[in-house]
Image (cartoon, rainbow, N blue to C red; front, side):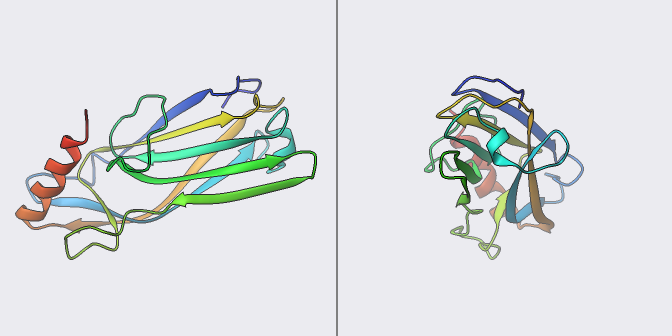
Length: 166
């Protein structure tokens, strides 16, 4: 995220899963955990330099393309979200994960968020203040595995995923 970007700015990146998701064989990705890492240009993690005043940095990982927007937590394409809140006056930074990967699915793999789309989307943004004088880098560290789903489970997930793309 470019230094000096205004309050409310959003940035998007994508992660290609095409080599791991396969319709014909029922191959999908089971995401077990997501960690968000915030750093400055030199790999540092001084949060005070990341924003110009008290503010927060937010992150969302989705399996449908939200463009450069944050989506609500009830959207079925939201894989994980988190934030870094920065209180410069009190020298406090609080890093939280708001939503872990969904684990309420109907399949035998319900401990994971199952992805049948060939791309994941990472959106980062700043709220409450502009970005500071350094570029801020957002990394999503994703622990996942390739799984083989039954035709029934694969189709159910594909239909649910495309149904929420409106």
